[in-house]
Image 1 (cartoon, rainbow, N blue to C red):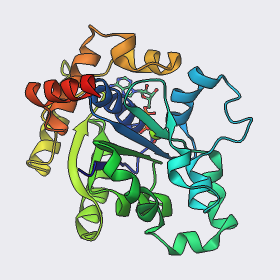
Image 2: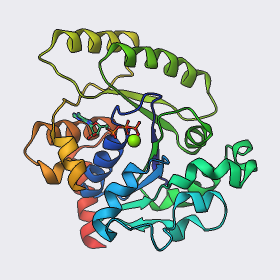
Image 3: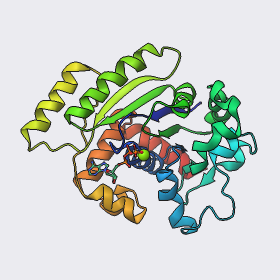
Image 4: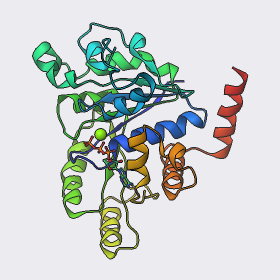
Length: 270
Ligand SMILES: Nc1ncnc2c1ncn2[C@@H]1O[C@H](COP(=O)(O)OP(=O)(O)OP(=O)(O)O)[C@@H](O)[C@H]1O
Ligand SMILES: [Mg+2]
């Protein structure tokens, strides 16, 4: 069966795209689902998070086989997929070179389907593929939208973020040939403030049926976990952050106790 494919998208920076991609992928992988993370952001936060712990700070020194080399057709995708050290969790690394690609191969920006043709042969091998995007609707993000079917948009319950959604969602709805908005997820939520309550209600009222019921609360756990190169499940397993994130995965990916048990059993027999 081919993977379910998602991209994490927002025009606004720092709203939790990488945090969600990473922690959801961890939750899916440890629930038994084979998961591929694709880092399509030149900042490469996701790649650093996963690879510094494995290979040290100079993990790029020996020429890391990353997605930019695949996009330039210098390497094949399957040989660039890396093990992360976590069972069932794989990564196609990002690179600062992603920003330079249009100069290295000007045809790239005119071939929005190139990423799709690179990733599609990998899909039968995975249960889930999550693509982490840069905070922009640039040519790379458009490639991600062609290569996946569902868009997850994290947002903070803040006035400027609402304006961002008002731009992004109608734009996505017009792009009928590409991935469609799947869920908006309210992140960094403080339920004890009137402002957050009101703004979350406004987001839900503006986009009915398109906002995840599970909000992710603001805590220091995510930043602490990121600093240590850990998922929130490893860093703070009994925290509200781990609980929010796991409940969000159950909701977003339609997981159930039966589906998880089934996958665990399959994995145990391989
Ligand atoms: N629920 C949360 N509570 C507190 N901090 C959070 C939460 N979610 C994410 N963060 C922190 O916010 C910062 C930005 O998150 P992240 O890097 O995931 O955003 P991003 O959308 O990927 O950013 P960019 O657009 O720059 O790629 C990180 O330090 C992360 O640890
Ligand atoms: Mg990011």
